[in-house]
Amino acid sequence: MVLIDLDGLIAAGVSAPELWERLVEVAVRNRASDIHLAWQVDGLHLAYRLDGQLSPQGRITPADESNRLVNHVLVMAALDVGERRRPQAGRA
Image 1 (tube, rainbow, N blue to C red):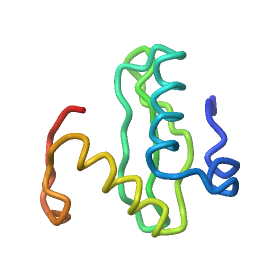
Image 2 (cartoon, rainbow, N blue to C red):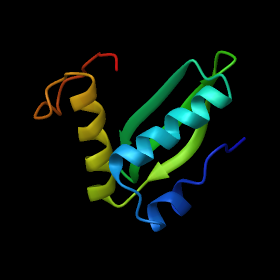
Image 3 (cartoon, one colour):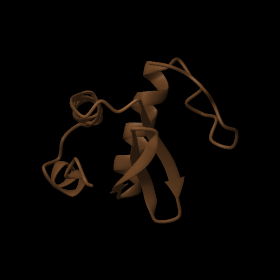
């Protein structure tokens, strides 16, 4: 079940902070316990954890859009923006 139109938001040119706010709004509205962002070869994949199951929502491309979103989240979580090789855990 797709809960958010990522392509539409990217095409509308929303900023990284606004995109993050929309992702969080959808997560809260649908009672998601987690928002997962994972780098893959074809872009940044988004999934929500709903009722214990990951629900894929699509991917964010191009790379500059996904980089802006990830940097925004890293800054909010007080994580190292320059660290891309090792996993980081944080909360925002």
